[in-house]
Length: 419
Image (cartoon, rainbow, N blue to C red; front, side, top):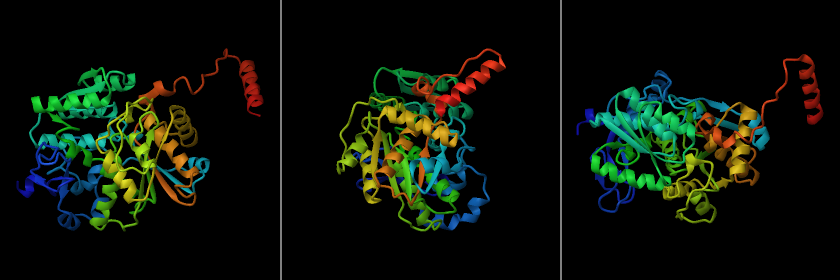
């Protein structure tokens, strides 16, 4: 394959044995069944980009396009990314940390989650490889993003989800005209079926045969965080874990910026956050193990409900190598954290954001993250998608007649209650 058709990519490479494969729609090594990931020509990339060339480009994730796995310009999701990094002083005070930042992918374009990053990459690459039908196995946000981005690109799409997903996420897939299929089972069962369908029908399944490309899109969060902090990696980054892929790719993103000379190597620590009702990775990390035991999910954080995480082993490895840690939070702690983030910073996160904020609180209180340090919390999805989780836990509106006297009586009562 010529440089013109592979961009800055070199090959697909097995993460276990290092064997290389052509840059096609394949994701597993045929020798040891290890996962494949994209290998790049970092020497060429280093010559091609600088802080100045990046700064001159549009404020999207594609300003770092040499580090992303497409051969040409993106054809899907050209407006995705460069979401706000917000200095969260009020939340920092509540959590007892010197400096806190929120990477807010709850406002990502077009479907309000970080999945728009990975889908933009996967579908752009799928089009380069000649696919016309795209699909995914999803716990919700990925389904929304595949449906929306496929619609904008004129691609046919199928999304496979557990049938008990939040209603908002189901509607958010149907509205784009995707074929939505609810499976009576957990995500792991959905994923197994999708692997069979991908093999039989030859479609571009973004998180099956296109996974090596798809997963790389997550790195763009790390690139943006570093640039938005003035070209430096944060001391501590806290990442929600479902498959574990986002955590490993944020780590890879920081490492790549060091390789191509854009930031200094400050050895940032990467922490993982899970819901207690689906915490195979955090349970293993807290026990000091380098392997996890699969679990059956039971949590309101459905976007993180993957009981057999594909990248769990690698997420544990990253936390070990960066001397970081993981923790998990109960459903009640998730709701409390969602409310805390909303009340202090005006950010309404979905349940996964509640997981990350709740775990940040635990890590700071336990001293695993020192109170005098600086932390970035990744909020990956919008609370409007998971209203079911909090609608009976945030109070009710006051109702009065259209009367000034009634309003004054209400105010007096509120002052008395809050005194």
